[in-house]
Image (cartoon, rainbow, N blue to C red):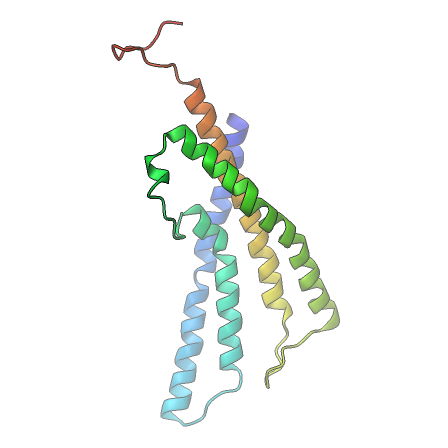
Length: 182
């Protein structure tokens, strides 16, 4: 159990730190939007680079904080029936759904994102916008974000396993509320 707790702590600490660092990208997006609004509205001089840059920064932001959002349970979950299940069933259901849906997606797509990035970087691929910015920074962030999501998936699955083991290790209570004798 000590190894599981160590792995969980390392992954959660890394994703917590990086999630907080990557969340600063929002300020970059706001800065670009502010620059465009001021340039367009006050000086009647729109920029060709602000729209593609906003899109790139927002794409980077979303994919880079995905693992942090997963760790913090920031995604929408409808758990009306799930909350009524016993704790053991909740742990098992989490494991089954992670294993059936998240693991195949995340672990299948992550190596593909590396190829996606490497092809763009090695060929000097550029976007089709007037600015013609390179595409590899966004694609590198896609790979990093998916790698962090895979690591967080491992952490979340280990948390469910830890919960199952801890529940199974508890001594059952007798009818009068006292612990059963071993």
